[in-house]
Length: 94
Image (tube, rainbow, N blue to C red; front, side, top):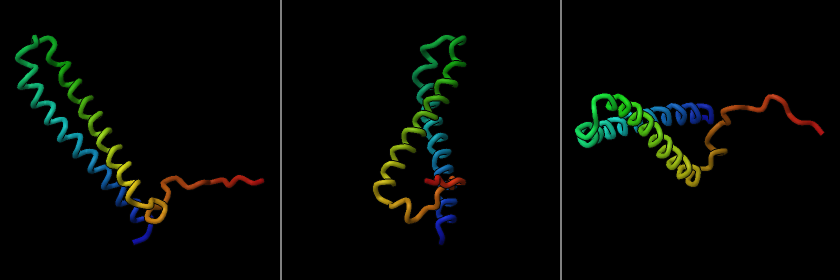
Protein backbone atom coordinates (compact mmCIF):
# COMPACT_ATOMS: atom_id res chain seq x y z
CA UNK A 1 0.00 0.00 0.00
CA UNK A 2 1.16 3.49 -0.70
CA UNK A 3 1.15 6.55 1.55
CA UNK A 4 -2.14 7.94 0.22
CA UNK A 5 -4.05 4.74 0.93
CA UNK A 6 -2.45 4.55 4.39
CA UNK A 7 -3.52 8.13 5.07
CA UNK A 8 -7.05 7.52 3.83
CA UNK A 9 -7.41 4.35 5.91
CA UNK A 10 -6.01 6.10 8.98
CA UNK A 11 -8.42 9.03 8.68
CA UNK A 12 -11.35 6.68 8.10
CA UNK A 13 -10.36 4.44 11.02
CA UNK A 14 -9.78 7.41 13.32
CA UNK A 15 -13.18 8.84 12.44
CA UNK A 16 -14.94 5.55 13.10
CA UNK A 17 -13.00 5.14 16.36
CA UNK A 18 -13.97 8.64 17.48
CA UNK A 19 -17.66 8.02 16.71
CA UNK A 20 -17.62 4.69 18.56
CA UNK A 21 -15.96 6.23 21.63
CA UNK A 22 -18.50 9.08 21.58
CA UNK A 23 -21.46 6.68 21.40
CA UNK A 24 -20.09 4.41 24.14
CA UNK A 25 -19.36 7.31 26.46
CA UNK A 26 -22.80 8.83 25.70
CA UNK A 27 -24.53 5.57 26.62
CA UNK A 28 -22.43 5.27 29.78
CA UNK A 29 -23.05 8.83 30.91
CA UNK A 30 -26.76 8.57 30.06
CA UNK A 31 -27.03 5.39 32.14
CA UNK A 32 -25.35 7.13 35.07
CA UNK A 33 -27.56 10.18 34.62
CA UNK A 34 -30.76 8.14 34.59
CA UNK A 35 -29.78 6.02 37.59
CA UNK A 36 -28.13 8.65 39.78
CA UNK A 37 -29.24 12.17 38.84
CA UNK A 38 -32.85 11.97 37.62
CA UNK A 39 -34.24 10.77 40.98
CA UNK A 40 -32.67 13.82 42.65
CA UNK A 41 -33.80 16.52 40.20
CA UNK A 42 -37.05 18.20 39.28
CA UNK A 43 -38.80 17.70 35.95
CA UNK A 44 -37.96 21.21 34.81
CA UNK A 45 -34.21 20.66 35.06
CA UNK A 46 -34.05 17.19 33.53
CA UNK A 47 -33.76 18.25 29.84
CA UNK A 48 -30.48 20.01 30.64
CA UNK A 49 -29.04 16.67 31.58
CA UNK A 50 -29.18 15.44 27.99
CA UNK A 51 -27.15 18.44 26.84
CA UNK A 52 -24.61 17.97 29.63
CA UNK A 53 -24.32 14.24 28.90
CA UNK A 54 -23.82 14.94 25.20
CA UNK A 55 -21.13 17.56 25.85
CA UNK A 56 -19.37 15.27 28.35
CA UNK A 57 -19.32 12.40 25.85
CA UNK A 58 -17.80 14.69 23.21
CA UNK A 59 -15.17 15.85 25.69
CA UNK A 60 -14.30 12.28 26.69
CA UNK A 61 -13.99 11.17 23.06
CA UNK A 62 -11.73 14.15 22.33
CA UNK A 63 -9.49 13.37 25.31
CA UNK A 64 -9.27 9.66 24.47
CA UNK A 65 -8.57 10.43 20.80
CA UNK A 66 -5.76 12.88 21.68
CA UNK A 67 -4.21 10.45 24.16
CA UNK A 68 -4.17 7.58 21.66
CA UNK A 69 -2.94 9.83 18.83
CA UNK A 70 0.01 11.01 20.95
CA UNK A 71 0.77 7.38 21.83
CA UNK A 72 0.63 6.46 18.13
CA UNK A 73 2.97 9.33 17.22
CA UNK A 74 5.58 7.94 19.61
CA UNK A 75 5.35 4.45 18.10
CA UNK A 76 5.09 5.18 14.36
CA UNK A 77 7.15 7.41 12.07
CA UNK A 78 4.37 9.44 10.47
CA UNK A 79 6.41 10.75 7.55
CA UNK A 80 7.43 7.24 6.55
CA UNK A 81 3.92 5.76 6.31
CA UNK A 82 1.51 8.66 5.75
CA UNK A 83 1.07 11.34 3.12
CA UNK A 84 0.48 14.92 4.32
CA UNK A 85 -3.21 15.81 4.35
CA UNK A 86 -2.63 19.33 3.08
CA UNK A 87 0.16 19.78 0.55
CA UNK A 88 1.91 23.10 0.16
CA UNK A 89 0.76 24.93 -2.92
CA UNK A 90 3.38 27.61 -2.99
CA UNK A 91 7.03 27.18 -2.25
CA UNK A 92 8.89 30.01 -0.61
CA UNK A 93 11.71 31.39 -2.69
CA UNK A 94 14.73 33.19 -1.44
